Image 1 (cartoon, rainbow, N blue to C red):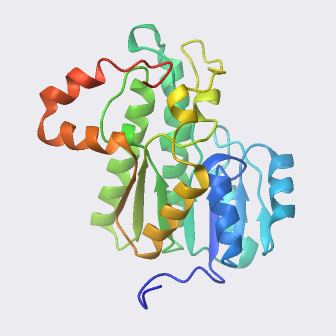
Image 2: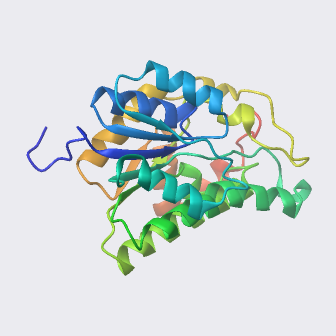
Length: 261
């Protein structure tokens, strides 16, 4: 560890979306570093099960971020250990539907969880805390892929908000843009009907192992990086998108939104 790196020992870290996927993996790794954890997700039982596995101080704070009272939720998080050093916004839902078939209510649901929830939590904390904001975005927040119009819009908005926040205020922010990671994101992604997709994308099954992703996130956060990209071939698509967009769009149009290939 470099002398200027963040030492997580004793840090108070609030993780949303902590019951599964990247949020759960981060909780496990941070517990190993003896951070004090506040865990939030909808499923209280899953949080309690996770808490029992962690050898550190843990406060379980269940909440449905679609309907939460964010002022009360944030106050409870602040009270858990007497402050917050870091918030990891890992809660989110995916999408598997084409724009032509997707009603506005589905877009609203995606925006509520992926954008408005972290913005609301941040807004409650800003007057009383200078917590480091770790934002789990997506490569879809940097470029577009078929079947993800609302998801991409929510992640683009998230990146825009937190980048601008850093300009307005001296708030430490790390934006993380993962590619495909071995989580249940595609399984729980919503379709045009608002129901769960219920299928694991083949490319996601072969994605980056979730613990590897989490370790790389913490490495970037420890070094206080502003932006961390964790991806395989999506990383090359990103550079094509940036420097040779015409080639990128030809490739992206060939992607199947159901298999991710």
